[in-house]
Image 1 (spheres, rainbow, N blue to C red):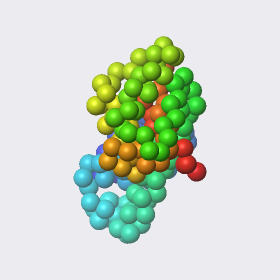
Image 2: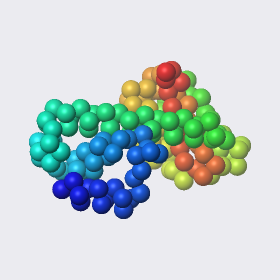
Image 3: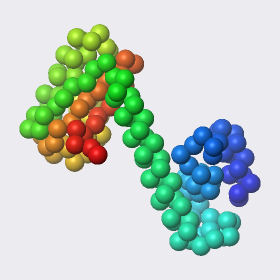
Length: 154
């Protein structure tokens, strides 16, 4: 089982030296993504299920931090940044974004309903029903990728 995972990690180009994950975290995530139980992983690694659970939790936290870092870097480079204040109707957000994109010469490949879903999904608790409950920033990269950030993030 571990040899198969090591082969997979090598095949997809995983390198612990350049990753936010340790080799063990990558192994555990790869096995969990293949529906291997924590108990079976623990047996294969010669450790406890609790240790595997801890490794998996740390790995998932590291992956989320890496995603957040990439989203932050993309937001910095995005030629379009639309600040959407609390109290704004979610249905008004697409036009705010489209207008800003038109001004910047950036194309967004989302219909209004799709864009509302992207914003709502990415904003999480910052959107409540149809209302923007907490200020957000909608960034659009020059490639048209939409990123949503909470203004009050740490």
